[in-house]
Image (cartoon, rainbow, N blue to C red):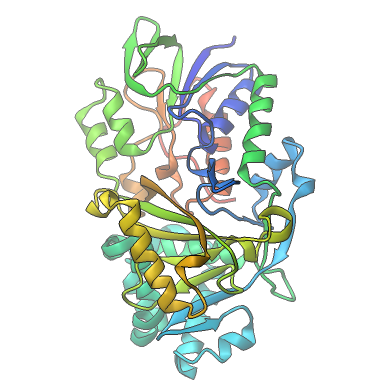
Length: 446
């Protein structure tokens, strides 16, 4: 018998859950606080260009993403491109796109390169990720790569992504990062092949909305949940716009701290566990430029004093003539703890700081090349996988009958990306419709 389900959150996770629950015969309503679906993957407009608000890429090994795209009728349109990866260190750019370039990488000596390569190869062969959860990422990398390689390469990269949270992060984080990117290289030639959909995620969500309509899912935009309360025989959801809706069951896909706030009936232990999950947020600038900066898709930055994490030049992946009007689209992410005061820096001040850094890095670049500069701020993006992380998580099934939490914090052995978000949703949907939902997290890596 079909039950009435309310899903809070219209990102990739909530959308996939809604689709799967509807296919399993449930009556589903999805609520999204924004005026469009998509969440972190949603598109926006920069100048006259509509593209993704944050940078996204698909790997050949992203089977869950590709399966979803196939259901949407889009997978056959994917463009697959060989890209290049660079490093900016000691004031210079170096390509790290092949084995030969790795061997010629000047910042490291021969022994240090050997240990770095051995670390990456060894991590790519590990299958029992759980044992890495009990080791800090810095201790593990120091052991395998050595002090100089750690200080020259790993530490700047960890700090750029995790800030000082790297000190509490487990080695499972770097294992997941290496495992994902290692799959991006084809067997044999080992070329890095990345994919994109012409039109970006705007196309994906247009087709997803049509799919949900065919599934019978009722999608309600501009509905920000304020309270979820148990009632006789179900749950009552209250929204900021005054709407009240009742359901047999509900799933909250909000970040853990936000989920802790919406249900006053949670136990103190549940609230404490949810609030204890540390998050990194992001301040991400999108730049539309008259001409390209370089020829790397991603430039990792290990140089101190650069105010952003990396340079992601989307036009080194996406055909700029066909899709960007001959211009270049660049993302400059800056990862920060969710409570960092830097989230309050104005767009104007960020623009001055970021453009000054680009001018130092790229002598041919000037601020006159910028056609549009736009900033996205999200405080809860990446849950930090601390030591023994999976043992500390709150369960999917809450103490409130019929209420469940499914969010990115339950990706216990991965790196937050679209593929693993879809994988989590697929696994959760199968569990949610049975009468006795397991209490543990539910996203093992396939």
